[in-house]
Structures are given as C-alpha cells and as structure tokens.
Length: 124
Image 1 (spheres, rainbow, N blue to C red):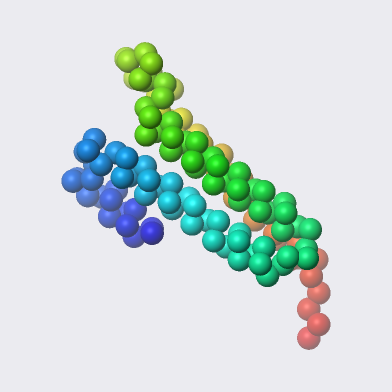
Image 2: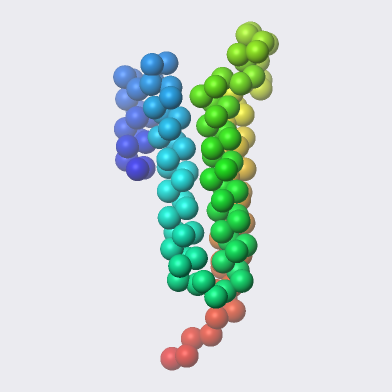
C-alpha cells in the first residue's frame, strides 16, 4: 500500500484533478490498514481490558482519516465560498489536520499498548 501511494505521489499523471478521488481513496485506504494490527490484537488479547482502549484509539484514527478524506473529496468549505479559502482553511489543509489527529490517536493507542506490555512478566 505504501509503495502504491509513493508511486501515485511521484507520478505527474496522478497529480491531475482527474485523479483527485483516486488519490483520496488511496490515502484513506492506507489509514485503514492501521486497523489490521488492531483487529489482530483484539483477537489475541480478547480477555484484556486494554484492548478496548487501544481499539477505541484505532477506530478514532480511522474515523479521523475518513472525515478528512471526505473534506478533501467534497472540497468543503471552498465549494461554498470560492476564492475565500485560497490561502487558509481549504479542504487540503483540513484533510492534513485530520491526518495529524489520526496520527495522534494512533500514538495514543501505541502508548497504551506499550504501558500494558511493560507490565507483563516473562516466565522464562
């Protein structure tokens, strides 16, 4: 997924407006791939209460990516006031704010997981 994203970013063909939705879906998919380890952790650690906390953080990450992508695809708010958001507040900037919020949420999940792992004892 990462390689596809890099190729898309570096290719002039995919930089056109024609592929705006494709790029957005690609970025959103990359964000949702973060749910795979979260689901794996839930399956392995079903009886641990920390799984609920980390899963909530990871779901918040996915929701953040989804909301940011929707702003980007739908071009909100510049579609409502063309020209007004040319310098600040346009959909691409809002998209990046939501990506940062998603990354912070993922970081929060990692901190909970690391704290949980530090309390485990090794029997060997």
